[in-house]
Image (tube, rainbow, N blue to C red):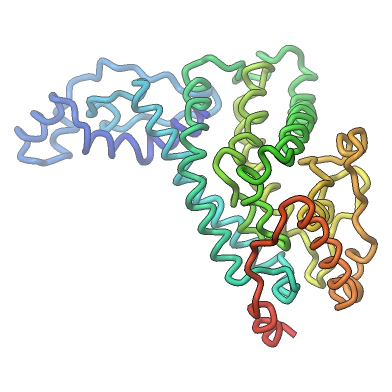
Length: 357
């Protein structure tokens, strides 16, 4: 995360901290220069602070703003605030960009007509996300701060890896490690003692859209992200690989709710990959398919449920008969797991159906 922080410092935060938390010397320079920032930059003596680049493969020359704040880049309070804002604000930006694109170009809008699609569902999904993300960022930022301050096993040069082969193996290793622990965390969140408090808000969406990807209770979302944050403190991970994997995770979380072909059929019908069809089964029938990336741990844990064949054929997937069958089984399971169904369905699906069909 130090690479990401350096980029944000260079192009955004240096200037903001210099403006709102100025160093005494910079304040005097600005005053003597008649508030002429250009003159202040040229008049500044050689900076006593030397910044160390986050990576030998990325060189960003600090501007004069980097030396003009009372909080230098390596101040823990500045790092904490910056990483919190990146996690929250940039996280929201990524959420809207990828969920929005997926919603517009990949997600099957005929899902609006499903009898279990909620009234105003997209608005409710976004609302839950906007409440959860700043709180999840509070719990996440300390992990990033610890990484930036050198407590993780992140390395820069490929030659610093335990072996040359590890530079390739770290990717499947990361996926396998996180898949295992997310499975058990997710399954644990379905335990009756915690489900209604923590995980039920995410299962409000029986037929989720891409905007449900981050619509969790804050502690639920953070709990399921823990394996991602813990991994680099236990095992070596190359810095750029770390950034790439986090980008992949966010895209996977969104697209797992939207990867349908334009004709309404699910793209992946794999016995190994825990794709969108598997996740649809999880939201419909609750106690199956807890895995994040693969079906391995569901198979070993006895919780795997093969997606219905009907989901891969548009004519049957969108049929009234299939929807009625899904709804009937889902209602039985909801009664067992949650008790009375508190969701608000109503006539929204029927209203939109006239526009879609």
